[in-house]
Amino acid sequence: MRRFLFLLTFGLMGAGILIRLGVWQVERLASKQEMLARIEAQIEAPPVTLAAATQPEFRRYAPVEVTGTFADGQARMLASRKTTGAVYRIIRPFEADGFGPVLIDTGWVPGGAEVQDAPLLPLTIVGNLDSPNEADSFTPAPDLEKGLWFARDVPAMANALGTQPVLIVLRDTPEMDLGVTPWPVDTAGIPNDHLQYAITWFSLAAIWVLMTAYFVLRTNRSPR
Image (cartoon, rainbow, N blue to C red):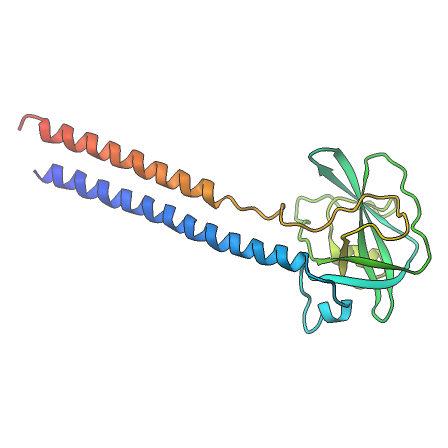
């Protein structure tokens, strides 16, 4: 009898823990979906001035509109696109009127393609602020002589190109051809795997219950 109660108690406790983990993932899913909806709404909102988007603090994903002129220099960051393969992100210094030099992620070109110089004429840029945290201890150091980077390390890029550590990701193609395809900010890179996790926990709970039932019935039928 004691063995029967032990198996039943152990089984119910284990199933309860697994079910609670599944419920927690469902709650996280709802929270993540709400967060993604807020970010998407912010990305697509009407643009504001750069000064308004960075005061009193930097607002990631804030839509901005800036007028100014590209400066000499660029950073090519090695990246990958699912439908294209190896590409280069082209990040250029930009002198924003009334704000100063900033970085503009103008978009991508296929790997090995020639990158044309940016027009050194006044133009208006519409994009979104971003602060990607892509560099870590495993990221190779940039080749500054070739202007080749392996992550968007905004402070380091700003230091190399002589700008403020502010990055604007181009949203739309401006009136002048920059020789690149825009790679605008979106939520595709923000992981949202909570549904899969919830299904996993609930599946484990169901298996745990079936195994508990099997051992309990087997124990109950065993000769004393």
